[in-house]
Length: 199
Image 1: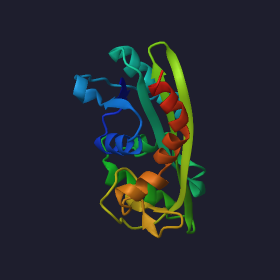
Image 2: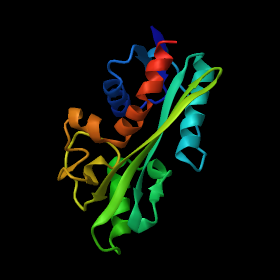
Image 3: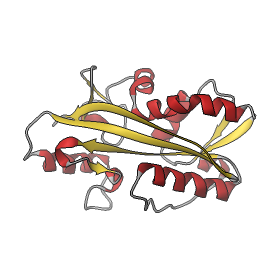
Image 4: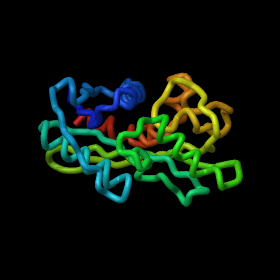
């Protein structure tokens, strides 16, 4: 069975990716499982650029094929911000998820509701010999001015998923893994991942 390195140290993201890829004959490892500690400057201006950068660096450092994603929240009233800078949106470099959410809500106060938005995700699989695949997914919804739910990270507690009346943080794992931007990006990549696993 082939080994695939998940190029992230985010526990929530690792759990989500592993759940979505259940059934693909791949041994999925996190960087901590192989004692790999890297600091990556996500300097690209695009989601695919950052995902490729992470996957390439992890693949080259480990000698293993690596799967990376880059995701972000795009709020239409803010012209698509925070976008590719979602994790670094707050001027406070040490801000946690809740502080980033509060900063976003403060910036939305001057705009009328509903605050329509989408989560987007770009996925890249890179092997030491080069890029294998890339895919894209999105999840539509809106930002709400209250925190709801405990099952998530980032902006999940203030992102109301279209058609559900629940925030991303209120969705049970099974439903989130059907609707999320990351799920949609990974689902689009499944045929290529199955082919890769069987090579």
